[in-house]
Amino acid sequence: MSKVWIVDDDPSIRWVFEKTLKRENIEHELFSSAEEALSNLKKEIPTAIVSDVRMDGASGLELLKKIKEAYPDIPTIIMTAYSDLDSAVAAFQEGAYEYLPKPFDIDSAVELIRRAINENTKVGVTSAMGVSTSDMLGQASSMQEVFKTIGKLANSDATVLINGESGTGKELIARALHKHSRRASKPFIAINTASIPRDLLESELFGHEKGAFTGAQVLRKGRFEQSEGGTLFLDEIGDMPAELQTRLLRVLSDGHYYRVGGHQPLKANVRVIAATHQDLEKRVEEKLFREDLFHRLNVIRMKVPSLRERVEDIPLLAEHFLNREALKIKTEPKRFSELAIKYLQNKKWPGNVRQLENLCHWITVMAPSSVVGLEDLPAELKSETLDSNNGQEIGWTESLQQLTFAMCASGKINILEKLTKDFETTVISEALKFTKGRKIEAANLLGIGRNTITRKISELELPSGK
Image (cartoon, rainbow, N blue to C red):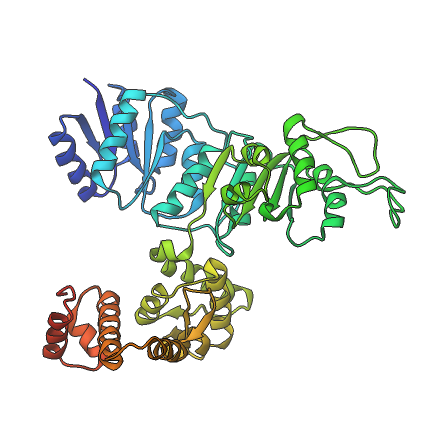
C-alpha cells in the first residue's frame, strides 16, 4: 500500500493529517523534523511526502533537495504559512510536485495527496536564481495561484498574456517570470505600447536603418534587438495599432523581423510577455484586435487579482510598504491601527496595489504619529466613495442629492420613508460587516444601544449577527 509522509514541527498540523488520512484509509507516517524523515529514508521509501517549509533544524526546502538527489521520482508537496513569491518559486525550482499555502482546506490537501500518489511524477525545474521579489506578497488564494504559475513556468519560454486592472502589478509579474527563467541573465525590456505615438512605435519596437525617414541620421536598434536572448514585455497590448499588430504577428509566427527601412531579416530570440487591462476577446469581436495575434499571445493566460479581490492581503502589503518607505528616508516604520486596517479593507481601491503603495508613502511622510489611526488618513480617502455607474469618485451627499432629485422627477411618493429604510439598512449592514457580525461593537460604532440595533436588525430583516 502507498505510504505518505507528513513532515511538520507543528503538532496540531500533524494531528489534523493523522485524523484525516486515517479516515481516508491512506497509510501514512508522521515526522516532526526533516532530519527524522531523512533518517527514516534509510529504512523505507514513501510514495509521496508533504513537508512544511520552515521548521526547527533543516527546512522543508533542504529536505526536498536531498529527496530529489536520492529519489527524484518521489512527489513532494511543500506547505508554508509564508506568503511570499520566493517560497513558492523556490519550492518548484527545487522540484516540488505542488505548493500548498497555509491555512489550507484539508479536503483539498487530501485530493492533492491522492493526485501525487497516482501520478508519481517529477516536475522539472531549474536552480533558484536568488532574485529579490519581495514586493510580490499575498496570502490570498488568487495570489498563491499566481505564485504557483510563475514557479511552474520557470523552465518554459512560453508566451504569456497577463490580464489585470491598472495598478495590480502586471509588470512586476512579468519581471518575476523573467528573473525566475533560464533567460534571467539576459535583458528584460519593457515598453508601454499605449504611451508611444503610433508613428514612432514601429521604430521603437523594430529599430530603423540610417536614412529610413527624415531625422533617422543613425542606425537604431529596437526593443526586439535590445532584448535579444531575454524577455520583451509589451504592456497595454490591447491598444497596439492594427498595422503593428500585423508586424508583431509575423515575428511571433516565424521569428524574423525587419528594421524600418531595412531589407535584411533579423532573427528574434526573445520571449514575449504581453499585458492588458482590457478584454481582448471583446476587442477581437469588435475587430479592434487581430484574432490570430490574440491566439499567438494567449498561450499561457495569467489573471492578476484586483486588490478588492484580495483584501486579506492589505495588512501584509501595508506593513511591507510602510517598512520600505521608512527605510528610504531612514526613519522608524509606522503602522496602521486595527481600526484603520479594517477601514482600508472596506475601500474600493480603484488604483489597486499602486494606490495602497502611494498611501503608505503619504503616511510615512505626513502622518504625525507612529500608530496611524482613522483620523490620520488623508481626507480624500475618507470622504470619497466609488460611483459604480461611471467609475468616478464623488461624495456620498452628492449621490444622495442626485438620487432624491431623480426620485422626485419620476413621481415617486413616500421618498423619505424609502430612503430612510435604505439608509438604515446600508449603514447597519456595513457596520455589522465591518465588525464581522458583532452587534455590540457595531452599535458602539453607530452610537446606538444594543436594544436599538437588535430591533432595527429585526425590522429591516437583516442577518441577526452575534
